[in-house]
Length: 181
Image (spheres, rainbow, N blue to C red):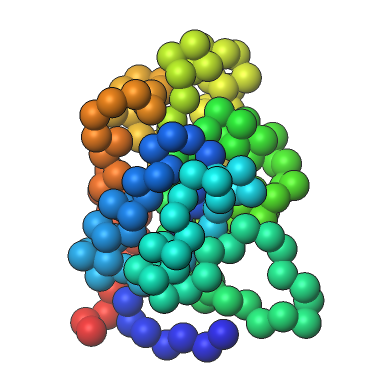
């Protein structure tokens, strides 16, 4: 895929949580801030999102599975990544370097390449106290990953707004200056 647009490209990695059904809010917010957007879903997240709405909004397919080597890349390389909602499972596997899904592979590779990454955790308060999760956050932060601390330790999926635009707020200071469009 060849794309020479001056607008930065954002990968949104969406995980399987109830609020994932509202991922369009983040897509719209990113597009309003002049991002081009591609969505990568964990396999389980596909059951939580409206694929047709997302693909119509972005003009691109949702990625969830590895492509074959002879297939073209459907998305350009990311300028930044937002992981929202980020589940207990994804955060812990990513911090451990496990790359058993496309989403985790992209997160591991992006972190290793220095791509700015923002994370909006979505888990229960009980999960947030688990020692593995606490250690995973420490490890991700030591890698330069930007983690939303709006609610210390966890953001639950119950009621209220998820605060999708916080991911963009975290990313924008981490990006290099953009040339004028």
